[in-house]
Amino acid sequence: MKPALTTVNATGKHTASVIFFHGSGDTGPNVMEWVRFLIGRNLEYPHIKILYPTAPKQKYTPLDGELSNVWFDRKSISIAASESKKSMSQCYDSVNHLIDEEVASGIPLNRIIVGGFSMGGALALHTGYHLRRSLAGVFAHSSFLNRASVVYDSLENGTAESLPELRMYHGERDTLVPKDWGLETFENLTKLGVKGTFHPLRNTMHELKTASITDLQQWIYEKLPPLENQVQNKL
Image (tube, rainbow, N blue to C red; front, side):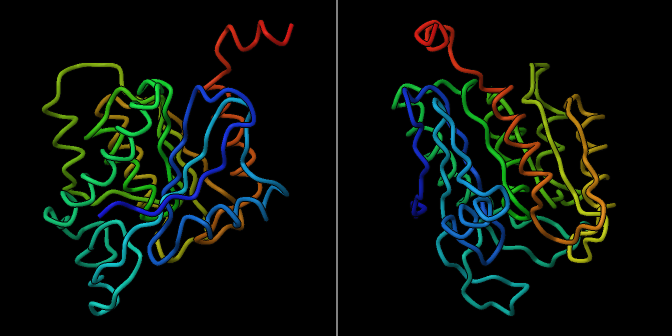
């Protein structure tokens, strides 16, 4: 099923895109509002469109099978749990469709960043290091991969190629997804050739923070700068 989309359009000519996946039980509009609350305005650029998709409702095992807006099912919220391959596969179809629509509108893969919060960050890791390795970058906030994740197998068995740069953020006081899970994920990915940075956040629980979104905002601009002709037009 196609995810519902909320977008913040580029204020000028659109030449790059960011897809921001929400956490379990949330929605795209809620994440957009959360970001706006933290930095006092939308995450907005002259040339970059920000997409906030909403996952369709499905049964979620950690909630005893209740319907929830989740990207995929988990057997449990644990780094030691195995991934639900069938659920992940259905999710991949939705993500590939989102990316293909951006490409069809004229945005190349190397001008697209994917990222997200919590489960959304995990989905971004699957997207950038298993599905679409030509993307410009990946960010994951308060996220982890399961120890036996297909992402690790994919990187181990894949051909040597340049991989998207990774930026991870994690609250030091996160009790839902412990920082150690995020750090272990980051270290496993770097051993498999991923380059990036891991940012622990002091006095932070399972949440986005003004400092992390402000840093993310700058990193996105650095990874997706205006195209040369856009800069010249301003001179």
